[in-house]
Length: 478
Ligand SMILES: *[C@@H]1O[C@H](CO)[C@@H](O)[C@H](O)[C@H]1NC(C)=O
Ligand SMILES: *[C@@H]1O[C@H](CO)[C@@H](O)[C@H](O)[C@H]1NC(C)=O
Ligand SMILES: *[C@@H]1O[C@H](CO)[C@@H](O)[C@H](O)[C@H]1NC(C)=O
Ligand SMILES: *[C@@H]1O[C@H](CO)[C@@H](O)[C@H](O)[C@H]1NC(C)=O
Ligand SMILES: *[C@@H]1O[C@H](CO)[C@@H](O)[C@H](O)[C@H]1NC(C)=O
Ligand SMILES: *[C@@H]1O[C@H](CO)[C@@H](O)[C@H](O)[C@H]1NC(C)=O
Image 1: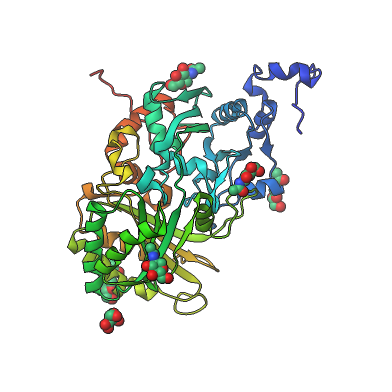
Image 2: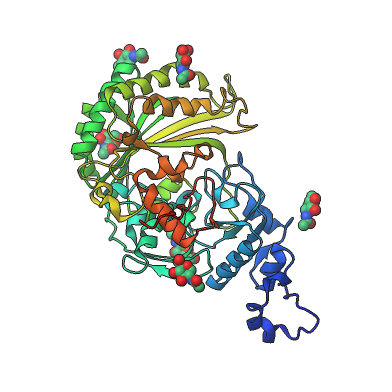
C-alpha cells in the first residue's frame, strides 16, 4: 500500500484523504506520483503484476504503457483519467486483454492504461471490448449481438464525470457506446436484459466435399441463398476454411432431432459431407465446449498469448465473381503458404478463416433497427475473420511473405464489390487499417460518432489509432 506523499505540514493520512482530491495536481511530478496522490492503485514497473498486465494477447504487438492504473472503484477511474489528462497521456481501458491489435495497452508507448477487473468470457475474451464493439457469437443469429442486450452503461468520461447512459438518459452517448465504446469513455458497469436459455443446444460439424473451384462456388452460392432466406432463427452457423478444406460448424438452439431436420437437407444441397462431431448440451455445456478446455470463469493473471496477424470483412451475399476470385486466390495463392507445423516453406505457420452467417431474413441481428446502435453492419450477410498465426519464431517482416497472405484474401473479395457492400469488424482489429479505420469499421455512422466524440471527448483522451476522431467544431453556425 502506498502512503500518499504530502508536503511537510501533512498529518495523519486518514484525516487528509478527503483533502487529497483538492490538492493542486502540480504537486505531483510524475504520472505515478499523481496516481499515488489520489490513492489510485497502480502497478509498479518491473513487478510481476506489471509484467502480467502489460503482456499482450497478440505477442506480435507488444507495447509498454506509460503507467498501469488498476482502479477498484469509480472514483479511482475518475482520478486515473484526471492524472492522465494532467500529464498529457492517453487513456486506454483494458478489460480481458484479448485485443488483436493490443489496443488495451496503448500503441505509441505513451499511454496510461486502466485495467478493469471485469469477468472474462469463455476463451479469454473480456466482456468490455466484446460487448462495446459488437459482440458476435454462436447465439447472435438467435438473440442478437451482445450489445443488443445492453440496457444501461455506467461510464466515466474524459472530464472525469461518471454518468449512467440509457436509451433515455444521454441517448447519443448510449448509442455511441454500443459499437464504438472504447473511444467514448471507460465503462465500469453493464446492465443486460437476459433470456431464458433453451433446455438443449445441439452442436455439429460437417466436413464439406468442396475440393475444386466449381464445388466451392456452387456450394457457396447455395449456402448464401439458404442463409438469406431459410436459415431458421434457432440456427447459428459458420463455415471455416483452412489448409484441410471447408467445414460447417453450427449451434442449433434446440434438440438433435430438430437440428437434423434443418441440417441434413442443407448438407445434401451443399453436395454432401461428413458429420464429425455432434453433441447435445445444456447452456453451460455449450459454453464449455466452445471454450475448448479453458476455464469459463474469469481467471487472472491473463494467460492467453498468440503471435498472429488478423483481418476481417463483412459483406452482403457475394456475387459469383467475388466468390470465384476468392476461390482462385484460395487454390492458387493462399495454398502456397500452407504448412504443417514444423514443415513446408513456412514452418510453424498456420492460417484459417471463419465465415459466419450473421444476417438474413430470420436473423435477430438484421431484425434490430440499424440506427439503434453504432454497430454498422446489420445489412450484411457474412462476417469473415482471417487469422494467420506463427507458433514459433517471428511473424515474417517481409510484406510479401507476411501481411500479403491475408491482404490478398480480402482484396480478392473487395475488388469485386462496391464500397457500400462491405465493411470490417473492429473486434477483429487490424492495426494496418489506421487511416481508413473509421470508414471501414463504422461506415454510415462515422459522422454521428464524431459528433458524439466531440461532445464527450473533444481532446481525444481515449485515443486509439483505430478509434473515432472528434468532429471539427464548425466555423459557421448553420
Ligand atoms: C526496470 O528494469 C529495467 C531493466 O532492468 C531498467 O532499465 C529500468 O530502470 C527499471 N525501471 C524501474 C522503474 O525500476
Ligand atoms: C473432388 O471430390 C469429388 C467427389 O468426391 C471427386 O470425384 C473429385 O475427383 C475430387 N476432385 C479433386 C480435384 O480432388
Ligand atoms: C449426428 O451424427 C450422425 C452420425 O454420427 C449423423 O447421422 C447425424 O445426421 C448427425 N446429426 C446432426 C444434426 O449433426
Ligand atoms: C464461476 O465462479 C462463481 C464464483 O466463484 C461460481 O459461483 C460459479 O458457479 C462459477 N461458474 C462456473 C460455471 O464454474
Ligand atoms: C496469385 O498467383 C498467381 C499465379 O502465381 C499470380 O500471378 C498472382 O499475381 C497472385 N496474386 C496475388 C494477389 O498474389
Ligand atoms: C462532462 O462532460 C459531460 C458530457 O459532455 C457533461 O454532460 C458534464 O456536464 C461534464 N461534467 C463537468 C463536471 O463538466
